Image (cartoon, rainbow, N blue to C red; front, side):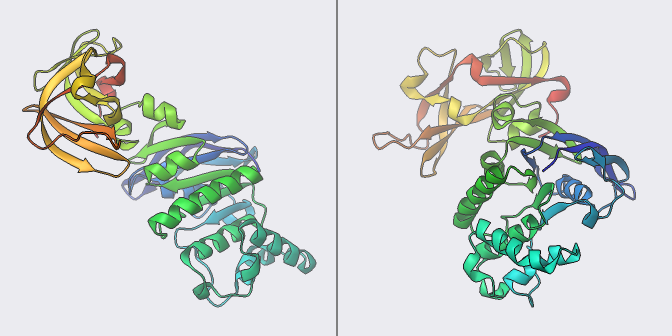
Length: 356
């Protein structure tokens, strides 16, 4: 295990800037997730760390050593690909042993290390099977064992769960997190799945258009998003455009006056409100903000219910309510009050308004 340092890493493909001066410090044993939409540069960044893509600028340091110019096999980084990339003609054991053989590990050592890696991923009894005889989840574990068997300084995971069905993803992501925690291995994972990132990471790196928008823990990004993009991408937010008319007072484009934290300068602004911080009906009484609206849509989501309320011709908010057995659900067309405390709002001004 080792500390990973990325310093102003960039990659240009002709005139296209795929990654722009990304810097990141991953502590020894930390699990960091690069999160962002497709095309944001996260996989290119991961592949530059692994050595599969040469950077246009910047450098990569692993364990204090500059590895920017080293080929992948000299970086001691274990990589798990989105497609698993298993050799179809080799057995499970042979697939896992491949990296050891390429590193000229003595044959007497290969067998015990392969057995230990398969035991870690709970595939000890499947060593002689071929990849086609395994489920998707089992193939993913083989790929993970192959990455771990070389005892890497850093583990790199490129969308490792994207080929699994939803239920299996829930199981395997917990298994990966528990295994990483047990081994204490420095890990960087790429995903576009918010829930996956929130569950697995020690810290998140939110990326957009080749740049880092914010780095922090789940709570930091959720409670204090740096800009409009992060507010809309990490979790869900009601994003209301308008003006800060004076400290502690915001007015939407639809003319609704809202009490908010007094931390935004007067001028154009965007307010972010998390759906679960809003309440409906009688529960809105006595709160800092209380507005009336019309229910336009009610979405039943199992554990929760989303109520879409039009509060002005220009403004609509989504209110997320726990699905309780005794809950009385509003109906489309109902007139209803929506309320929330001033502290629930995040006001984004200036360059932080950005684009969603």
